[in-house]
Image (tube, rainbow, N blue to C red):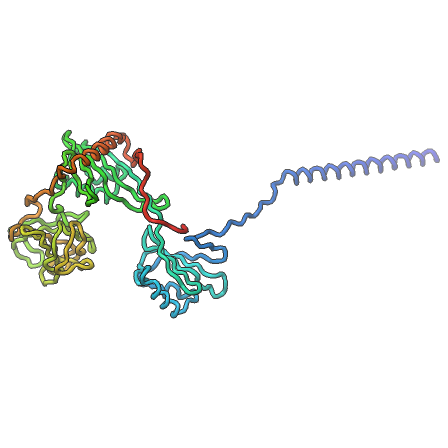
Length: 444
């Protein structure tokens, strides 16, 4: 009996030892697994606070940024009405800004930014307005109030495009990387030396032009420095040249001017809707009568340009012509532009105008069924067909400037030969000179 009791006690002791040993081992393993899990788990992400941006040279760490676009009819007072700026301050600011950027010139569809305080009043500290891609105006609403007009740096880069005519000049130049504006300029340059309506598939063109950039973004184009067109295997150059600082004109490889005394058409991107005729059915008067002009259909508001230099003889309104302008170019030639929506600023009797200057905008005033321009042309006091009349060319390069022109022509010919005709996209030309830079900027 005694021996049985001792054996039972030993059995119980061994069992307890095994139990506690197993529990300890299990606990150790659990702890080890937890440590491994913790060790393998990713560290909590650190929150990195981005610094507040500096806009237009203004730190915004204590300011809220409100961006917007000016809506039609809005003025400075309305734009700042929710930002605790008094009418007295608006009036003072308007008076201070007159010689910098008049607040009345703030127009619809342009960008603006308001920087206001981070408080319940949300008082505006700065109002920044961008009238165009190059300039911006800072209206400082702190303290004594201040206005600054700043110009961004404009980089001018020389570029080139080239291609072959497929369907039309417009489609081919755009497909090569050009724009409608480049097409129009190209067409104006060659208008009097090429029949652009009779181009053939396979005709070759090349353009060297200036592209304007702000902060790496294209904002427009400068001059076409040179153009080349090959029709029926015959090459024709257009080289921009202006000796002694004079305004540049375009000349062929022989130094002859490509310009006539007049532009071929008074509108860009338009179509002829009615030609010069001795007998045409009038759509308003419902009878046949002479139509001694050329009608160009175009959207209302399209700028109308004078085809040549001259003096405004009339800028008036009549029942038939609507608002019209008549210009005397010289003793031989005069032109008239009918049915305008309105005159361009400064156009009045006695005003001297330059070729290509905007003199008015397409409308439908007078006897007109829709927006268009009726363009009329006089030679020696008699109305003639503007599209058929033979006009004098501008003067060729003077002998004393031929050597300077030859140097420019040689440079252009080298660049034209270097253009890769396999590419239809714009490419920067390899030029030894650095791109021209104009303007300055503070801030952005």
